[in-house]
Amino acid sequence: MSWLYLLLAGVFEIIWAIALKYSEGFSRALPTGIVFTAGFASFWLLGLAAERLPIGTAYAVWTGIGALGTAVLGMVLFAESSHGLRLASIALIVIGIAGLRLFGAR
Image (cartoon, rainbow, N blue to C red):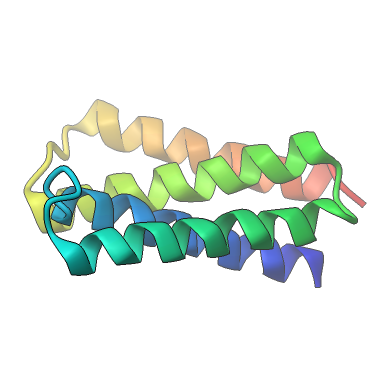
């Protein structure tokens, strides 16, 4: 169950990060509300996951999921660069998350 909490925490991490862009410096009410709501949900779920997973693993996977999802959605939604080296860097994040899942936690 801890890994499910961690996955959901990562999804909420992506949601608040994307909403942050849409909030335009917290000047738009709905995206700003989403930032704070999703941010709270993300931290809460991370806390639940960290009860049973090593904190180093949980935190690294959580930030990795957030970075990965936010980078991909940045390319899709905001026409951010999809340069080959950027994609290779994203692949390294995926490899790191997989390695932590396979070798770093119970």
